Length: 151
Image (cartoon, rainbow, N blue to C red; front, side, top):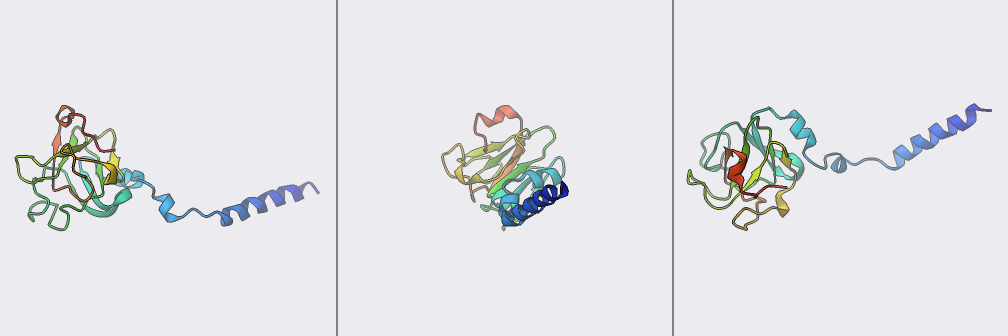
């Protein structure tokens, strides 16, 4: 008779597990899995929030994501909704503009923070919305970011 309460407990726990499934949307609520699998020394950009829809990765600078040179091609410019920094020594500065003058407003992602899962609420230093507006990036030291960090 002592086994009956244990069996009932196991059955109740199993029933709860099937009654309250975890959805795939909830399971991928941020970029932790992408960060864990990312190659050290690279920054990544994704088309969707939560590091979904890989746009590309790059270990160097790219002053124009839409010029067809480097890892970022025309399909990546003004499309990023989440970003990841797996850099080893530097932070990444993302820009709204293109060209080596690094203009148009910027936002930074520190290597300590690792990723920004949803850029919808972030703004460039110019005040423009970051989501779907990144056109270039470069690696910088922490002091170049002047308190404009992605969240």
